Image (cartoon, rainbow, N blue to C red; front, side):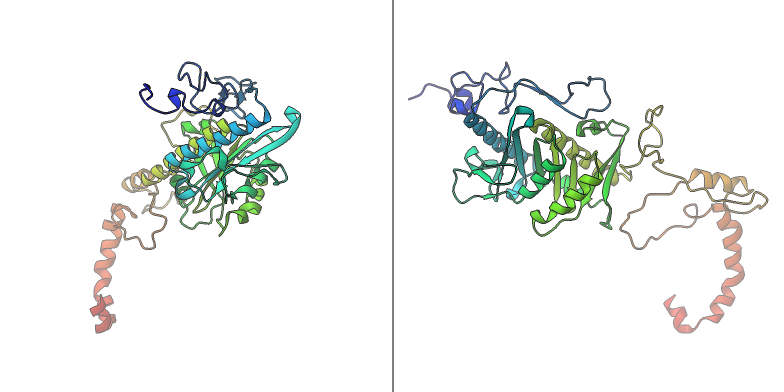
Amino acid sequence: MSNKPGNGWTNGDIPSSMFPLTRNGKLSLYSHQRRWIGLNKGWTRIGKDATEMDARHSSSQAAAKIEETPEQEAESVKALISQLCEKFFNNGWATGTGGGVSIRVGGPSEGRPYRVFVAPSGIQKEDMVGDDVFELDMNQNVVQAPKTPNLRQSACTPLWYVVYKHRPTAKCVIHTHSIHAQMATLLDPTEESKSLKITHLEMLKGVGNHAYDDTLEIPIIDNRPSEDLLADQLESVIKCYPKCNAVLVRRHGLYVWGDSWEQAKTQGESFDYLFESALRMRQMGLDPGLVPKAGSYRDHINGDTTPSRPTKKIKTDSSDDGFRGKASAANQSDVDSNTVPMLPRNGKIFLLDIEGCTTSIAFVKETLFPYVTANIVSYLEEISDDELSAI
């Protein structure tokens, strides 16, 4: 009987082949062994030619590649995909067998063909193992089928290849069914918007190519009955939005990619944070796509400079002396101090209190009241009994 306190990977019970850097199959946690099954000895989102002080980071940087045989490399990538899928399930991104991951390694920079690995379709993502993962070539031919029988390639496979075709630096694509991503596509109740805009949030730095005060624009495509039918739309928006590294699918989820699996994961987490922020901002009556009117450093503003709550001034003739910002000091103050309120965009009927809300208080007292007093008797005499009963 074993005298170890328990079973598991911290006791060396998992074979060393699962972790390229091990000591007799046992991880030395928090000292020099990492928790993730890495393909390189380290990673940072700050690229080779960038500094930690840069406002934007467009590429990441990996430490030395872990030396492995082709067989060991395949085993590591497959195990990593399984580990990522479990993490995304725990995030709420891959429930009900949804979502998926693809990673490719090799390529011209390494003097060898690309090897593309994809998660299978219809499998419990939190229970995946490396034996469930497909290996393909760049023509979508199966190089090595999963050891687990009866599995099918991810329905996302055509979309992985669209990204790899038009983003040559992409090494990983992640598809999530995050509730935040799905609901963010419905912030426009007409469901006609082609993109979602977000600005002036710190986590913009995490999505790549953007600074805090830039305006992030994430394209939105419409959902289809099956995943493969999204490929043409995805290809079109990738061409139209050269800076984008993510695409939202309306009422569905998110596709996000990066120049490494670490960058794709980091950007996916940042996008999800921003989507949740956008949803909460809208609940507070704030538009996440508009530059704040005040309370933000403003020496250097990039992106959309539209005030968050614009006041629509009405052209008036200064010689007049009535309502709508004319000669009356009380009226002018009233107009200047009121901005357009943010109302529910899906509302069909709005019942508003005129006095002080849509119209100057002075105008109600000086114009509307005298008009009603002068005309109400003649109005009531002219309408029928039935019309009067309805009133």
